[in-house]
Amino acid sequence: MRHAFIILAHKQPAQLLRLLRRLSHPQIDAFIHLDAKVDKKDWEHIFEHPQTYYVADRVSVTWAGYGTIAAALKGIASVRQSGTHYDYVHLISAQDYPLVGAADLYNYFEQHPGLQFLDVLTPAALQPMMKKITQWHFEDWKIPGKYKVTQLINALLPKRKHPLGLEVFGGSLWWSLTADCAYWCLNYISQHPQLERFYKYTWGGDEFIFQTVIMHSDFRGQVHNDYLRYIDWSEGHAHPRTFTMADLPAILQSGKLLARKFDMATAPQVLDAIDAHVQQKSTR
Image 1 (cartoon, rainbow, N blue to C red):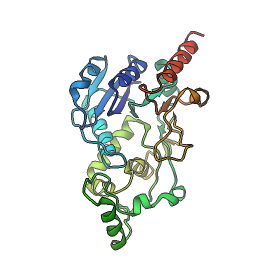
Image 2 (spheres, one colour):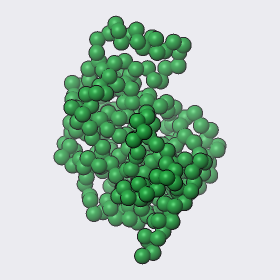
Image 3 (cartoon, rainbow, N blue to C red):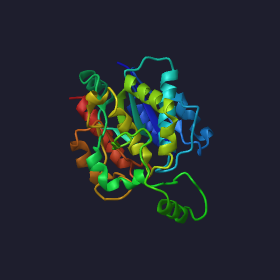
């Protein structure tokens, strides 16, 4: 079984390199999408790491904008174009970190083949947040008075509906999909350009598009509603908590394969502690 990790990165090359070292395994390759706003020259050394590949077709990523979807799709396309046969494709950020050794991560998927590990919220669960979908949002626009313009447009225009008439599902952007499923998503979205037009004006469309198309596909029966990541949203903010040493017990007790998010510039100790824990487990 061979794995491709698509990693979305925009800062801290040293932290990305540390992540790559933790993912080092003969059957694990990494495909790095660098935000188009960063200078590749600062990241050249990253691509000297074995089994690490550059996603050349880069896009600019804006929080809650369409760029995150585009970057994920560019990553899937790069994986497919590599010509290597992969069994699983994983989407993570450069602020993710494994909670198990690379061999244990590999073995987990060997023991659970053919499942789509995806966080899925049902249409009923999404009702409180449907304004992200039904209203117009212009997160990628940089114009004066954008928010007043947005309010005016939403006051004048009717509520938006999904262009394919699909019930909308949601959940986290991050996932681990079989390669067949990931490539199917790429094909389906490419063949329905109205999806791009729709999600360009959705707030945080990356939290809806993959779940919606997969839950209306033949892969639906393979979905395991667990994305295998530990992410702490308990503070109620728009962004998840950035972990410190205070979070270590919860992280290690989560039973997940990965966690996010981490910042090596402000709290490297928590990454050191995770490494020590993984090393201790591997020597038992």
